[in-house]
Image 1 (cartoon, rainbow, N blue to C red):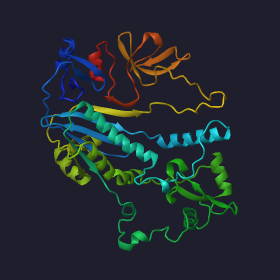
Image 2 (image 1 turned 45 degrees about the vertical axis):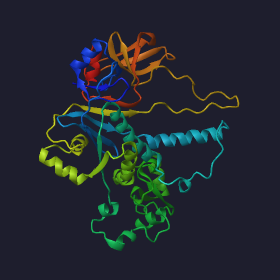
Image 3 (image 1 turned 135 degrees about the horizontal axis):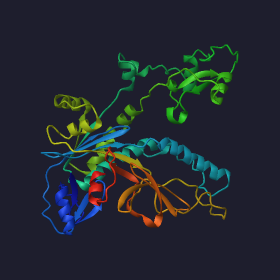
Length: 418
């Protein structure tokens, strides 16, 4: 088992074996600064010897593959699961904002000069910006515990029109199906022959309208996500009395994301690590992975991207993201009552605590924050919050091993096991 090491000034050194870390802690020559991944900081000075370490990053829309490789072995391997709730939370924020205005609570004045066209160059949609920031954040997190000398990131560009129509070429790119239509609504009506696609005109309802197969919040306004329905059928679908036999198209969110941010990632990393960042492409990764007999996965791709060949592999971390705070309606500054409680409890879900010399995860608190509900792999228990002590917060990026093991009274062993 590897233990990550920081020098006296907090700079990353080469990791050591768990046995050596245990001796350093026992002799009071180091202290624990992080539980997962287990990291110690030396109390005395050191020579600061480092080896070249290459970090391979397999960028993605829903997951990120990470692999830090030295000449002899893999030092860290992880798969980051990106959050998928950003779009929903943006909708909730919009609801809160409108509620404050309608109920005459405190709110800022409406700003009309804040549309996309007036934003600065390089603006990204909030959901895309969060995924972009997550790539940078997780790379910085690895650089905090390992002396990374080089970063190699895989970039990709996708031709969406080529995916839809492999034979497209030349001026055909400018002559898409929506070329002569004023908007998407008009095109959808023409595509469906101004006819309800459920009853085919049997309801004799003259009014037709476009219906979103997936919600507009998740599926967007693209034509593939809309279908023409009459008012009668649309009302039944909305009320849940009718289920359409239509499969929504997959969409190209992942492909669009990679095409949008590929060079932005390289540019941002170059600002952080000048002259130490390079990029590669998917076909090169595939060419190098297949001779090694490795399956297609984010972890294996990252290992190959980092120039991994026959180095000894390490255990995999699964890295998840948890939002740090829940949104709340702001206190009205004119003396009205609060919308929700202002107090934030000491312990939050996913925090790691110690209870009876064992490590547990917090499920939540109740009785106005005086009692806490704890869980491990085998049971759920309740305790007074005075009987537990905080080990580490569970917000932000969380490193875990995918296999859950029973808690141990040995803090070092439990921390190494994750």
